[in-house]
Every structure is written in C-alpha cells, then in structure tokens.
Amino acid sequence: MIIGQGEVVFLEEPEPRPDAGQVLCKPLSVGLCGTDKLSFSGEMPAVEYPRVPCHEVSAMVIDDNSSRGLQPGTAVCIDPYNSCGQCHACRMGRSNCCKFNQTLGVQRDGVLRERFVVNADRVYEVPNGSDPRVFCLTEPLALALHIVERAGDVQGRWCLVAGIGNVGKMVVSVLRGRGARIIAWSRSSENLHQARTLGADVVVGALDPDATTQVLDVTDGEGVAVAFETAGTSQTVEVCIKLAAYAGRVVLVGHSRQVSNVSGSEIVFKELDILGSRNSSGQFARAIEMLTRCPTPWREMISDRFSFVRSLEAFELTSSKCIPHGRIVIDFPD
Ligand SMILES: [Zn+2]
Ligand SMILES: [Zn+2]
Picture (cartoon, rainbow, N blue to C red):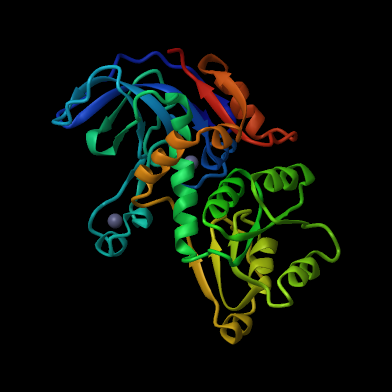
C-alpha cells in the first residue's frame, strides 16, 4: 500500500470475501503502469492515500460468488475500469472515457495485494495452455489497440509515433500488425533501437537538429497521415501537429500538464482531426487473442521482474534516474 509520496508499507489484512456477483482472485503477475509510477511519486492528482496501487494483472480464481461458474484455479485477467453508466460518455457508448470512471489502483484500491475481489463482469478468462503471467499485459495492449483504433485505417499510411516508452512500443507493434508505415520518434537511442526491432520503418532522434526535416523527407514533404503523441510533453504535442499532413489526424495519449504552443490556424488550415485516447473499450478479447497467439514479442517488452516482497524496489526503479527500457512486473508465487 502506498501511504504517501514515495512511501510503501505492507499491511496484514483478513482475507476478503466476495459478495454476490464478485470473484475472489489471487494475483500471478502485476504490471507497473505510468499511473502507478505517478501514484508513488505523488504526481497523480486522482490518487488519495493510502492507496493499494496497480491495475494490470493476471490472476487465478479462488472463489467465484457469481453466476459465471468460474472454477477455482482458472487463470484470468481483469478489466480495471469502472464506469458510471449515466454520463454523456457512457450514454455515447464510450464508457472508457466516463467522466466518473474509477480505475483500480487509482480511484479505488488496486491489485497489488495477495488477494483481491472484483465484480464478475470485469473478469476475462485466459485460454488454457497459455502462460497466464503474460496476460498482465492485456490492459496495456488493449489500450494500444484503442489508440490505433482512434486513428482509423492506417494500412499503407505513414504514422508517426512520438515517444517510444512502454505505450509507444505497444503502439508501434500494433501498427506493424495493421500494415502501417511507421516513423518512431524518441530522444532515446536505445528506445529507437527497440522500435526498429518492433517494426518501425524509420527512426528519428528527437534531439537531432533536422528531426522534423527527416520526417518530411521520408513522407515526400507531406507529413504523416496520423501522428500519435505518447510522450506527454508539450514539445511532442507541437511536433505531432506540425508533422501531420493536410487532412491528417493527431491522436493524443500522453498526459501532459504542460501548456502547448499550438497554432489554431495550423489545425484549421490543415483541417486536422485532433483526438484524445483514454483507456480502452471493448478491446480486451482481441488483446487476449493476440497474447495467446503470439506472446513472445509482448513478453519481451518486460525488462524487469520483482517478487511481491520486493515491490518497493520495483517502485523505486520506476522513479530512478536509470529508467528501465521496458515494463516492470511484480510476480506472486504460483
Ligand atoms: Zn496501465
Ligand atoms: Zn460515465
């Protein structure tokens, strides 16, 4: 449990009991997300302490008190979002951006605990015979699928991914599967190298003085059909708007509280579609299918694993200077 900025404690609690319609689970693997890093560092405004963090989890059913009939020992993963069902977004069928959404580990206690209880409709079964631990990547992969879905048809089109962190890498991989032509943009040569391995056609160092010219050159001076902003900085927001082609799209994913110097006239003149992308909606089944069919490239995105008792080290690594070049996962015993 996080009890304050940078402060983690282990608490003994009685085993929770599932109410009617709920499932009691034991985590197998838990992924650390950008939001968990921000919760730990005290930069997540939606988080009040104390808070049990984390929402990316593969788990095993212990007791199903719902009509689902899940057997004890069934491997599952969890959709961590909880929407209100009433607000404008929910009425539009877009519960992923519900005004009152509560995500496990953010607005509600999360899954970094030896037992947790969730509503049965949030539980997805993992296919038999696959390694259940890899399914802690279901939520971030579903998020990447949603991001790319916001962009529409990308087949054969130039797409810029500005920011090659954990989200950017997944977006590159999803775009590869969709037949896009991909330009990866990052300050980190290590991350650009990984983007290349994941299928980026062109990599551009964000600090190169001619970085924008490089993008224009490969796109015949037109710019990209879609620019994905995944870094959450004002600079990458500006780059995406600048490098989007006329009639292009910009999909904003990163949470930036910096104020961007964006020209309204450039958006009008190019008639850009500027879209936000938050959480995911209806992509869990597809993400599970992708992780089942071909788990290796996704599993390789995990760079560091810690046991549950070493969770504090995992959190410290997220906020250390030597930022890991992949996802951090916390493993519970079988
Ligand atoms: Zn996440
Ligand atoms: Zn709502």
